[in-house]
Image (cartoon, rainbow, N blue to C red; front, side):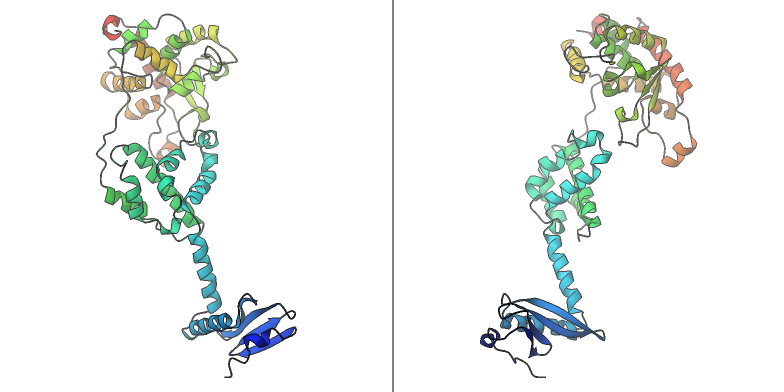
Length: 395
């Protein structure tokens, strides 16, 4: 087989046309100054043409080197055209930096998040603790060692934050894999093994013992927005957000229907929640209507609705460590220690999801009547002045 027919100097004088250098290498010139290199091969019994670049950007020596590499791959049983495509894909994958994948994963999940993720809670653990260290690293190169070194400084001191950040890092790697990028999906799991069990213990929101709640409840006797809001919060056991955003149209007879988008849970995956209202709760709501503004029963002094901080500060000023959210715990312990409420009913009282999806599909009840009876008993307990005196609760 004759090779190296062409010369670098001679290429400049050739007019438009096709010129063979030998061994399947051709220069196809469109005019005297421009052209392209083509390698003709037989791959798996079929004639193929493989482009090797534009001339004169790719000179004769480079074209011969590329054609030689392609022929070597062909002798080894590989398709040189597919091998080149694979190398290009691998190179592109390495250009995907983790910060770009993380933002793309966040954008893909915004529709599932509350307010489209505007609060930033999903992305902030990544933004604060992962991107500064790994944001510039190609996602395909991230290993368990990288993750261990990234999370080690906060693994024991900020355990919950570290857990969230690592979980979301795993979601980002899953997202990268879905894009076709070759990533180590086991890296987060292996990083957990390297980091070990967190030493930090979880801390619960301080709560008043259920025996002391009546004393505090009865001290909320000024009829202000804050006092009434705290009373209804204690009476119903709901979370602060739906309580603060309660609207007149949500009250239907003696039932409060909390919209699903105000309940804790994934957007569009959380249903409305019915809260049975005791006679005492209805009395508090009647008094709150006197303060209503723009449809909200608990407006703030200036604009919007009452803040959670306002209720917390009231408890702080009275020398209490307990916080408004803690009354949910007070109610739950009271249910466990004083009543015979089943686990399912007690958990439903707090708006918790109980049982698997299959169990819930068959158990189509929210135990409304049973919860109503229990909340009436809870209201009677709050009105009982034989419990811990107010002056022992409020300093």
